[in-house]
Amino acid sequence: MTGFTPEDLDVVTGCVVDAWRSGLDRDWSVPAGTVEWSCTVTATHAVDAVLAVAFFLASRRRDGYPEWICAPAMPEGGGPEHLVEAMEAVGRVLTGVVATAPPGTEAVIWRRPRVEVRPAADFAARGALEMVLHGHDVAAGLGVSLAPPAAVCARLRDHTRGWPHWSSPGWRPAPTTDDPWSDLLVGSGRA
Image 1 (cartoon, rainbow, N blue to C red):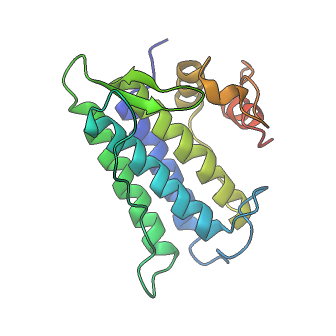
Image 2 (cartoon, rainbow, N blue to C red; image 1 turned 135 degrees about the vertical axis):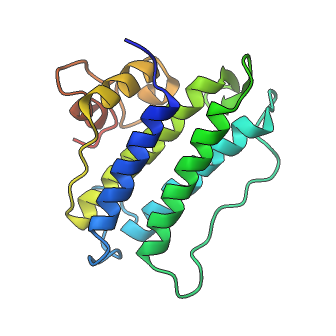
């Protein structure tokens, strides 16, 4: 099996955007699935998280995160349609940053439990994991379906196996079954 790719990230982006778009007429002030945040706050966080991953790689920093990160803000009078558009845009940004990184490009991908430098290919998987799991939270809160393709979920699960987030509180190593989407949800404490 090959690793998670920028093309896979495009598929995840499309799935999340389609799910959120199908819930535009729903109440985005309700809790996002099992998290305490509203769907609006969770979606804003997801957009920020994916943009941050792109920014980390684009910075090429190897000693820590870039010094400046600006979280996106909902435009005055904005609504869920702006969040859908923002997620689609940041998905494209991350895909572009990963796909155009020269061979051998590395940057800091996370700093907990320690600063770790990883190759560009890992940034697509990190961003996709943020996007699809928070995307699931929002979709669950809205009562809409989010079902990424099994092959893409399997590559994401397998690519991220052994990453430190799988040992975070509430998480456990994602199981390996014939339902990789469920494996990601179970591993992240969402099922």
